[in-house]
Length: 241
Image (cartoon, rainbow, N blue to C red; front, top):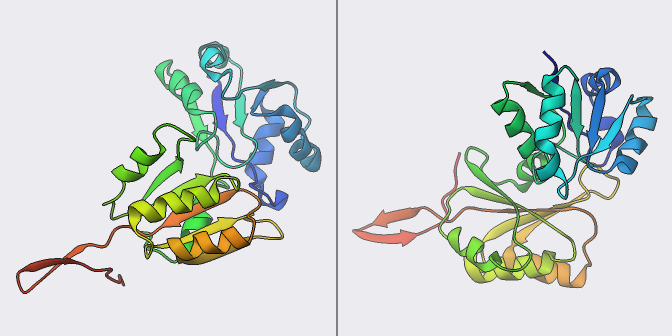
């Protein structure tokens, strides 16, 4: 039976493509792209001559997931790529994977680039437990989403646009507290890669003076664990080994 291959692509540096990913893309019968023009740049770089490309993005995936999964079930090996990173992680992919699983079509996900993992490790915050929140709602529901995370003790990861970064840091400061440790990573794997660490208030001030550019990952330290001392519960930031 044919498969659906989930193929991650570089988030910036084209050299991060794996040999296995290139091999899969050269041998499938159909490649689904978030934007075929963006994917063609990568394909030309690696000499990938795709037999057929089709668009699969957030505006059409609800309509095409069933149809494409039927085509795979009928014997068409298919690969799914997004513009950058792991398909399905804040990118189209979930609906097609679910449709394939429901039809008994095998899904094989290749390991590869994903922006939040290097940003998480770069942050210096605990890695044993974390929560990925992706993009906050652009308008309605933004404040309530943050409020629900106020007491979250795991390290929190968010994606954000450079145009909304300062707003996001300001809102996080109001909810989590101005002294909450955080980091902002941008342009990961690219020439101007940068990770800035500090408090939410300090990061807000920094990016008010320094206009951010590129894709943004915000990592926020979890809420301090309650520590009981002399019968009184106090909140302190505890270091972990």
